[in-house]
Image (cartoon, rainbow, N blue to C red; front, side, top):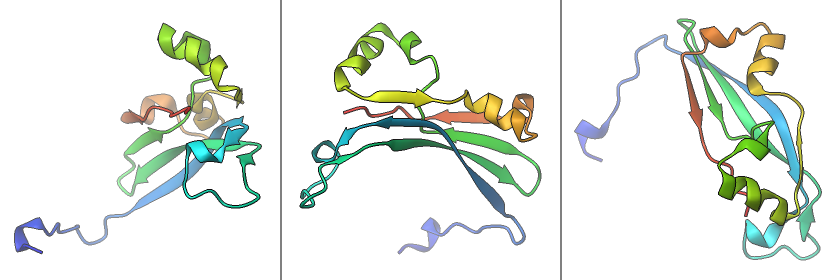
Length: 121
């Protein structure tokens, strides 16, 4: 590997990662997500859609959100119309911001949110 591709990480810099599970959906037909098929394993009854709180040792915070929003009916019309056709039962317990607040993390203290779209194949 070329020397210019090495990244020097400052000594003492660290992060903590906290897992948030605000969403369960299913049943998922596994052939939509993986191959080859595992004999006897056709579906998962429930699947999580995780979010992560990432905290730097300096106190800076960001959220990486892989989830489905609680009010998924308010997605763009094409997506909101598609979701019911998947046959998934979507259970969203709370908004990620509400879960963070319950655990002492104020939404205003989160500097960035990275949203990754949910693939409801």
